[in-house]
Image (cartoon, rainbow, N blue to C red; front, top):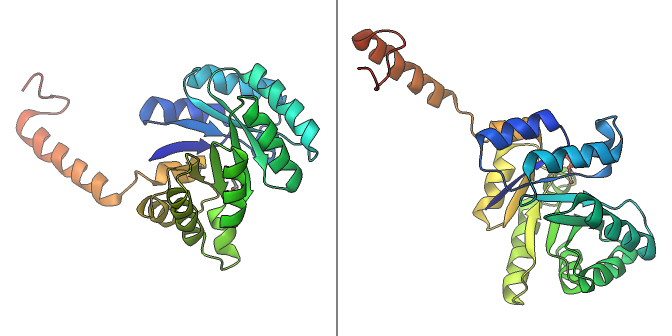
Length: 225
Ligand code: G3P
């Protein structure tokens, strides 16, 4: 199961890479625009923090295949290392995915709402597909079910494309995607921290420390006891 950060907030990315086993960062035009800094600076800062071997997914903003391909070639060169060009699954996007993948540029097909969109993108050569779980749940279309159907189709047809589920608003959605065999999730900063939080864990740790310090004294660790 891959865990990626769906954010361009460099402070959070630094913190998360320090604490957790993170597999990469995903961005989109909305996420980038929230940073209110030049695009290039944001992307290159992220690359510096995560290193060349960690994945970064960056979205092209054109809606015409030829221009998407030009952006893809540029982004591959600019970002360097493990980079995936995100392309929405509009018809011109599928054409661009075919061209980019034939040129050896890795692609993440995005803005996916149906299993057939995912299948078409996979056949066109996408490395990842990104179904939007919460946006599907918002229209009562069951985002997790869509993820399950996509992973099932990829297995049935022996496709190497991976499912990177996106658009989450709660831990339960992430958990259910992991239960149905989604290959990865990309999660925003606020929700990412919630994946590990539990009040009973904090309560238990406080209890251990209290009992230990009662016997051995404050600040004493197993090194000194
Ligand atoms: O990358 C796609 C994802 O960020 C969409 O998430 O929360 O805007 O639905 P959201």
